[in-house]
Image (cartoon, rainbow, N blue to C red; front, side):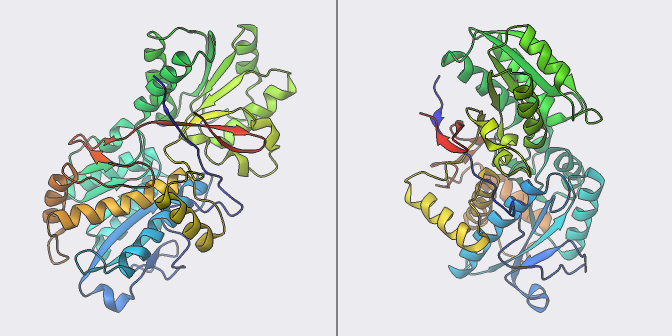
Length: 402
């Protein structure tokens, strides 16, 4: 089955990708945290009639590029919604906390936001922290919508939904795309066995590969403790005659794989997932090495769609960079929260638990036309319903795949 054309976004110089880092600046949270920021309302106003939406993601550390984009995308949506009158006439205040892509710090951030009076959470950004926060948010019955947490467990409880695709869906659709488009007969896979994101995608990829007209000739793992030298894995793929290498992990490690493959004169097709978004902005990376890299992505910044063009223009003016899929998912996520709250006439004087109960019902009945999909809906399982997409890098830039 052919996937829709797609494109993923350039991270850009400052890599603005975290749930809310840009537009509103760093005003700080009510808790006084140095890593928190809140937007659109002062501390005095937050004690009145405002919707308090929390955000959690990595603003610092190795995954900051993702958290920064999510932060910016959601912050842009908050600004637009407030300027248009808010949610049923009520303004939004957003408080974003840095978790450094660490599960324990994410839970600490969640507790800070709960003490602040959070009504709902747009987060978290990465899978392991998202799973950890999910364990505590379900006990409190606080609604959470992750823009980019792809692990199955991120939405295992009924208070949790996601905007992005799950890991298994990325693995399944990647295998289908490779097979149905005849990209290769012999395929190798390199994956991070210590990471739930990577293993989740890999396992679904292997399962679906059994239904496709290609053979997995090499499957090589690495761990977080050994993610700088991929020469052994690449040599095994090369010796096995792999014409395509599947890379279900993040762009930092992928940039090393591409560099080391070039050093050993191995030039297969490289195919990854949404974690590849950002590879063109890796410090010191020769972007020519990424030519012909393909990966799953839910967002096309070069689309002629009027809403997408406006989003890209406004984002670039606000943050000086092109939005990527993480920013787009967060932007749609904030509008989904708005639509769900309006669907059930939710008011800020309701308890977070009562809001959560209403949001659970609303999410399965709303439809939004976002920048990641038109007619975007959700299942009771928390999973979104939208088309998968693929992007290809050509000449140091992102190109549309038909």
